[in-house]
Image (cartoon, rainbow, N blue to C red; front, side):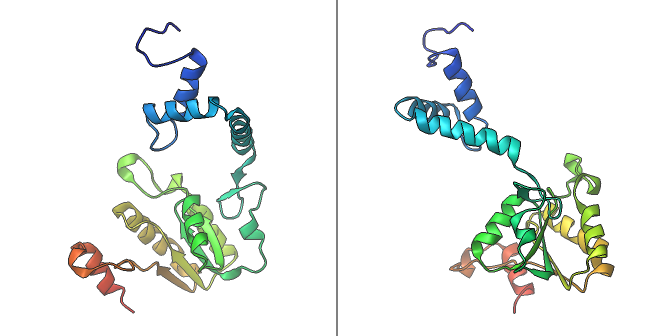
Length: 203
């Protein structure tokens, strides 16, 4: 590759490092360059450790056979934990949602990851998600409550409704996570949809 004066790039290898760093969300050209320079200027051992961790993660982290979240083994630690409540199953869109709920430390049931949400405009239908596996799971091991924790977008709401209809005959109760006013929120600044949801989900 031939570099012209003013490109701001040092070498072909540096250019490739910057290019790969840009795959991270929110990282543009300038940020990627700063990251690359930071690693090269006195942080090479940490850079090598990062590269090794990435290689191990890309090849070693797999999908849990039971809940479809991330796992180092065939079954993840949450699914193996005997202290979790088997009677409650929380359905989420992604593994990131599992992490978010776990960080709240307020839920002790099991999880099931769909792998996304229904979006006909993007060509994503029920066959592209883990919905069939979910139905088979609650048929084989009925639960008392199935919590639908999909996003509050139109796609998330559609996905929740679709799942609710698909599993209703096989679970004791289907619930939806509450939606409405955030902690510390003031009514005058809320949009009408959020306020409507808050009124409908009052307790």
